[in-house]
Image (cartoon, rainbow, N blue to C red):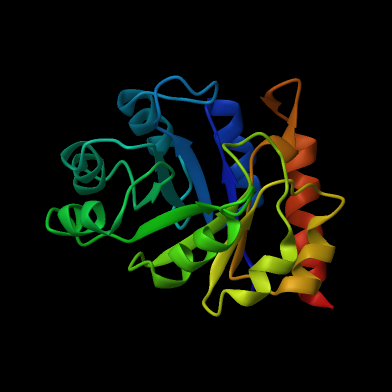
Amino acid sequence: MTKIKLCGLRTPADIRAANALRPEYIGFVLAPGSRRAVTPVQAAALKARLAPGIRTVGVFVDAPPAEVAALLSNGTLDIAQLHGREDEAYLTRLRALTDKPLWQAVRLTGPGAMQALETARRSTADLVLLDAGAGDGAAFDWGLAGRLGRPYLLAGGLTPGNVAGAIRRLHPFGVDVSSGIETNGVKDAEKMAAFVAAVRKEEAV
């Protein structure tokens, strides 16, 4: 079954919508400067409202490993998603501090796309996420995903209208959406529901 991650949740209303839809994962952006960013205190408060069984993913950009590990160890987060320039040395340092799952995002755009694909292929992260940017709703050349040779989360440019086709074509481990379930920069409960329904309907075919 294709896993679903609804990312960039920031408010109690977002959590209520997620609780009703039961995705496998929801994401908190813990990268200062992002328009979707929440503080660790806010993330903990939102986690407390989350239904059991939905796992929390913290999105970080070049954060000190100790900060990431602290939020994993205190129960705020179940998984860390690394969305910056974190390399294998960083992963090694973080693994010395936590045994929780680590995901690494890789951007498959521009002249360095093939090198990035190789980085994704060789990464020691538990799962890689293939993306085009930093939550801006852009898509990459999905043909690259078929060359990876390992499970991955598909992100970038997904919407309720195209996610079923993406699953049909690529068969990813999971799909990750943020801007595609927003209206005017705010999470839209109807779009969230439409996205989840599109994924589940495709799985039922």
